[in-house]
Length: 252
Length: 314
Image 1 (cartoon, each protein chain N blue to C red):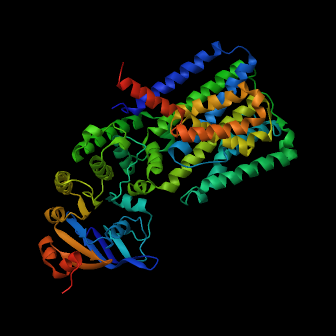
Image 2 (cartoon, each protein chain N blue to C red; image 1 turned 180 degrees about the vertical axis):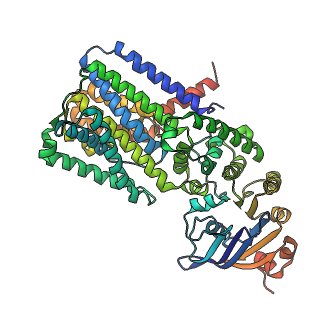
Image 3 (cartoon, rainbow over the protein chains, first blue to last red; image 1 turned 30 degrees about the vertical axis):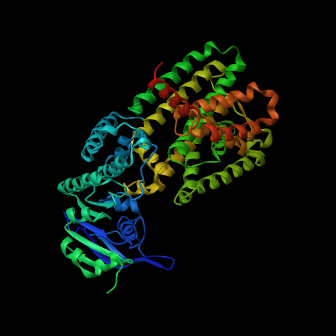
């Protein structure tokens, strides 16, 4: 298993946002987390990326125990993510956002940066090139030099993905990449997720758009009220009476 | 899109600044105007460093006058009381202040929020009190004289300060366009997203803070050896506020803006000496007006207007 989380729990005051959740991700898979609003999907993603510290439970990634570590060490271990509410660096251009994403691979000394040593200038040109390729990969190459503050919503969603990819993650957590997009744009995200998986990057997807989830994922985890309700392949999960009840809210 | 190639744009700014530094002496009539130009240069050096912290790493220091004065006094005391050559006391003062900034910043910058502003506010006040009361070492409120260097006179010092300013701007621009500068800007843009791409917020804020304090100390030490006489007024809280005002007025996140802000707000009080007593009122009003009418500051606002004018010609 690439990622293994055991018995995860997170409380906010008296609210059990996530409780007793076990979660595993096999390498190379696209795995989705679904559930009604407030089911704890985003909380789980925040636990898996180190933004939140779990109250209980353990997280292993590729044999490493990450529980309790600060979020930048989750990233350094190879877990990347995007955000449901855009977290773009609006003080930079689109290209610079992606170049910033490559920080882990181009870390340089303060003195070397200030004096712009030739070695650094060369690395800088390469970084620029790599960032352009990533913008092209996610389909927003034409916005490369635009100030990110002036970009449309759909392009910003893709920019978040390009920035996360720049860190070369082995596991990419996507938090509602299709939220707020129209059906055509959503189909585009569908193809993009497949291409990301095609690069050998394992994907965990939190999404409300069921069509998207059913099409791209091999496994689906259903959360309800912070607990695991069901898990399995998309067909089995969508036929599960418990899942249908949670979504439609009817009781027998 | 006009925002292309930030590097070439900033290089143009550096060249423009170099041209101004080179041509300004033709407009400087006497020693007094040279003095003001040197003062502008010294303040501009501090502001370029402070802007790295405020405009790029997104942290506020309300004690930069303290670092500036500590740089001045450390170099002065080592040279005057212990007979160190200025070429040794100068770098020693920078390193000393950098270490102090590290000690103060290390615990504070692990916290999120504007705790650095509070800590530096306190530090600045402590520095100014110590400088004013420890007469045996600092000469107390009357100040102390600093042994002159081999170089004296306004004209040579104009070129020294001008050269150091250009060097500082060059360093700052290099940093901003490096991976490290992007990491700092990322922290300013979104701390949570910065963490998600592996940027250690505490470490980078500390680096930006220590660097900006060291630059302030360098300007302070230069001031001491240039003017030959220093007083604790340089450490005052009001001077810290003036420095922040210069950065905000000129444009946070614009290296050239920091220089322009320092130039305008250093010369303005000299021209309006009648208003001497109301200087702080003037600074306060200017800060308010800047925040209301051009929150991005003078230089970025002008750049935007220029770009807009160029896009629709005629």
